[in-house]
Length: 337
Image (cartoon, rainbow, N blue to C red; front, side, top):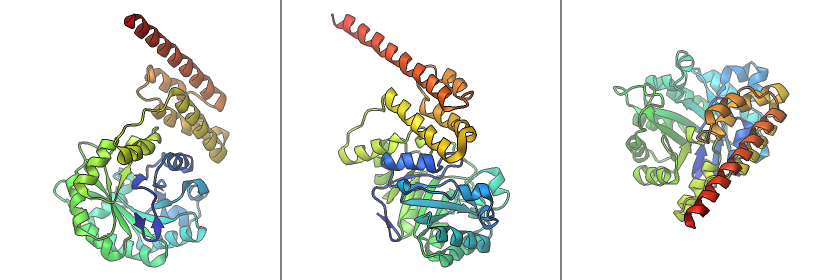
């Protein structure tokens, strides 16, 4: 698969997620088999005013390419200027326009999925960014604003007319947020309506899901969001399933522990001794979700302030897991006898 002139090694894509898909997580996802990673969405105004926090979000690493940097705005000129600046830095392979974020603080400014309600403005924004840069430009959009305003097919046609190199479609309306089941049929309709690559998004959690969405929609790639939180192994597992039809085992407790600490180390290196551990709290909770005593683990992680405290928690978890495995093994041996 290609997006513009950028070759994507496999059709699995990490969705943009605020507070999740920073540089550290993108590197891990790439290493574990993700074909293309997206940044968190970045404000055009933050870029144009050279806000220090925003500029930090533009920092990238050679280990996370190909990389799409997602921008959001309700102003064609401002977004075009921001896109030009991003291209000048050489930090991104692709620029994406956010037309899917459902957050109230975003849509109240007519940004994100609010653009689905204003096709004329959306077209102007896409056209302005396309004319401003030479690297590929894509757009991520939703099914529509609500059940009465499902317009993603017509918006996708506008995106193609504006010169977008690919379209990602989340099969839910803005009103649905992340509730209910994603509508894969609407993704299939978009795929039939345009000639540029279409990326399907919504409810892909397993290799079976990926196989089904490819078959049902004929999309060119699938985008994985919430199912990848605390689970970068999902890309390795789905790739393996698509290639062989076989399920890989879940990561061992030792693998989880090693990756949590590596993730923490990268956050500390990138964001410092104070912010790094605090940002790691939510990630550690996701990494250990579903494990025994996960509620207690969440409380412990939410109080951890440095690497040493995270390490103590994880060592206790590892010892507990080894004890449980030993008991289970002994029970099984006794039963077999």
